[in-house]
Length: 343
Image (cartoon, rainbow, N blue to C red; front, side, top):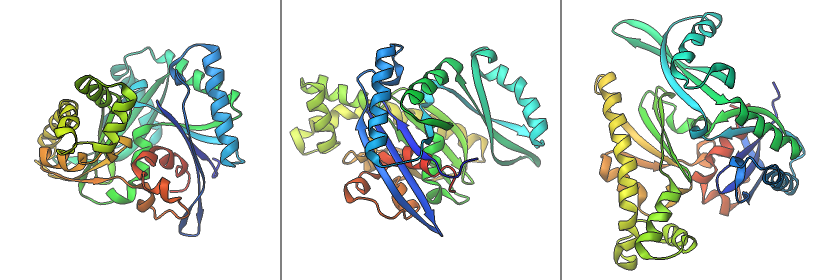
């Protein structure tokens, strides 16, 4: 296993690259760069679109000054199948054999069309019976081949692949390294990924099909403005009650309320299975976490403390430019990737 990897986050709207180095007990940010993604991004099947994206990644990699070519990359939850299941305590060899049957049950595609992986998340004990939570992940082979092709064109070697929520969990691990139960809410451009964290490990993970784009569209439609202007209003005013007579904030409510409603349902389910255990805090991640007033709104709706997920503070990472540090929640995925072999 290579110890030196850079993180590469291929998002819907942006590309991010980062290299973190560990010097003794201190984490140093050696390089970071951001660039807009291409118009159609990684979803396109067009060879010319894939070449354009590869060229953009290659240019960003060159501009960042990162010399190594081995990367840790993430893929969005919506493009893969993820399930946390409870299994009896088994050796890794026994678990690997047993999971073949479990995967046939939970994965909606033939197993010869996907690549699968699994990870033990932690031990469990229910009514005196010991077990363990295991996350199983399956990604369509065709999707992974597309990533391999694009990154090969960019001169990048894909060393590891994981889902975004795993990267975010790693990036924020020092904030949740306790016996308390926490929730990570990572609001991306098109989806919101949610993980309930118990004893520092992921216990439940699910995806909500709403994100920052839906909020921008709602503002655009309500105020009769184009999406570019709506995006600017969203970032500047958020849930403010003063700006434009609170119209921007009111446009956000239906989308946020839908996301909060799904989180509330998962919380109730978690409590039923865990002796009514209380959740200590919600940690917001992703660019939408920076919207003015969103933390207070979610806290009031769910009655749970809300904090911003700050990867820089979590590991006390040094050498971070001020303008990058100010947008910490936007960098949790790429920093989680960059930290993969360091923590």
